[in-house]
Length: 412
Ligand code: MLT
Image (tube, rainbow, N blue to C red; front, side, top):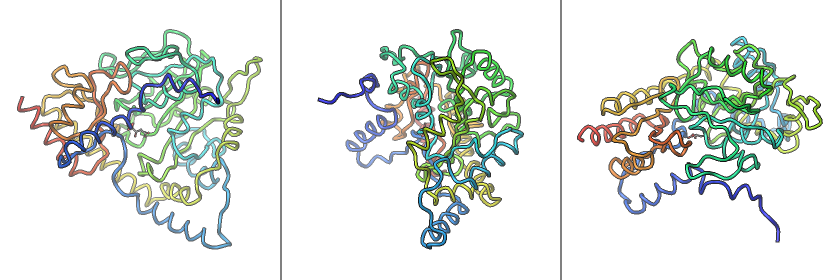
């Protein structure tokens, strides 16, 4: 009989979001008339920007004409898109990043998991706690961890707590680590990182020969002009960091799929014989072997994000979701609930009231308010006692959900 990858058997029962969906569908079956509002998974609700749709319609027309038809595209993405990304997302902010260092893909989730293909098995890995579950689960799948403890922590990973006690600013690891996952603006806490803090991470990584995986999928939500959007705004980051970006949360591409990863040339790691190897070459090799690129139509849609109309329209979307986040913060505060995040991020991180556990608060909100959120403990042990509310929904739903919560908790 064939054998399986045993590492999968170490994973906790279900990936967090499918597990929530399962519980919600059980509830909905038992209560078919309950008007459920979902503020759980961070999935966008508002339509694609007009500039992107128009560009995609034109791209479909291109595909219908022999002269402009496209077959396989470059695995790394079309140069016209990579050039715009390099110029507008990086060079315009003073970052020394060129088009050839940008790899267009179908998602930051895939890239943050796939990147492990080019790293060795014996790296010591640090994640924040709470953390986006993909970073942990993909390391479990790759065999980089031992078993999970009762609290859900995997043996072999270094967890860096990120709680109200340290103002959601994780301390540098006290043991030597080789790979560090950082996500700012943070999913799930909505916390941000300052330039000074990020510089400490870059300095640390360079001293230790570590690589930072910097997930900046939510950078478009930064409203504070002092905060860095990219790790490459920090001197020395080219020598120690890979950055992940996405069109999902700024341009509403969760269903359309487009993202990119920056691997600077000259960023090195060691082979087992001690030789230094350029990660850019390995990632290029990995992508050209296992990936055939994002569709031409979608890349044209992503390119339109960089047009003046596209920029204006995505700002409209970001402002819309940030206003939702403001409403969530304000209403919950009025109900006497402590909240964090939601100012430079589309997530509001809620301290569960009445000493409820994360899952108990989940059940209470679902049963009494018909509102779905995400239990903080699903993001890690240090998320226990917290709860994430996503600002991705219609204004009407956000207002209605908050009204129900305020009524329930103010009345107590
Ligand atoms: C989330 O809810 O954390 C996001 O949907 C995750 C993702 O973008 O994959």
